[in-house]
Length: 259
Image (cartoon, rainbow, N blue to C red; front, side, top):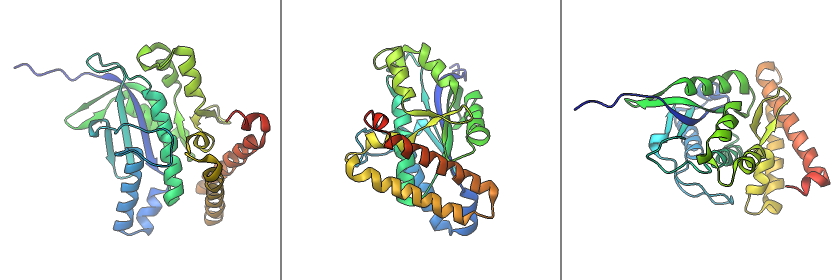
């Protein structure tokens, strides 16, 4: 019987790792590190419906998820003719990342950094590889830099041509996806979790302000902790600016009314 050729397919790739994992390894016990990895995996690869949020997700299959140490990769096929169209999967994945960032910060003071891209990849002999994995790694390691998840421009290029991703139509879905992101000072788009989580909370009136306060307190504590380590401190200075600008937008009546 002739073996099936190994060929690339087009997929949506999310690549995230734990910020400051090296310090965790140096300062925590194996048990504490194991718990951290488990908590991150449960946030990044949901196994059950989570309470406290409006949007619910279907379980991410093991075949679409890979992890090594502090690294997690989710790969979602986008053009397989033998499967149902990936309708809404891009929007859903970005919302899921909002939940993951908020949950990890609130529950354990954990921050993740990452990249989201679309491109060629394949899983063969249990290994995931291809240009999309390399691009996702570059987005995470060389472009994101701060505690943010950067979304590559190629994601929008795929959304423009792949009608299978649309829930409504091209223009409506592009607008919906763009509304989950924010353009940073360097021109990169990243998942705007601190703003978007407002709409995702079951009771934003009661829960959002405590989350904002927790976010602010974590930043203040880390700025002091890393006052003598400028390379690390810059990441939290970025968070401080992100927090301040988000709060400023929320305090603007015109913007707040649109949230």
